[in-house]
Image (cartoon, helix red, strand yellow):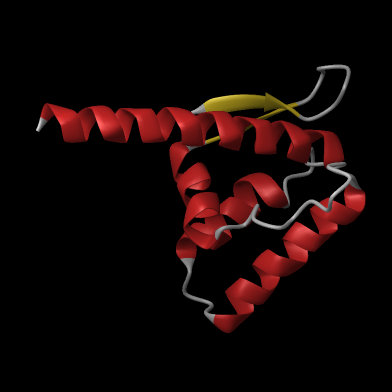
Length: 108
């Protein structure tokens, strides 16, 4: 489990699980989310939420997406700052995750 800050002051936090990060990876939720400016603002957060809603409406039995929504994306503390921290965590997790997988393959 990981903890991210959701505001600049550091007075609000949120917990993110490996399963949440795997769901983001599985559905490619961060691919082409941010435009060329690289700025994550409330519009980007709303775009992500709309994309996830559409995925859930298409197939309502996706429990992993529902969990991601309830625990992270629609959490009361989730704002643009928190999404920026989540993206940074995801990038770091993905790099670490790939290194661990490569080490496991080499060990076999």
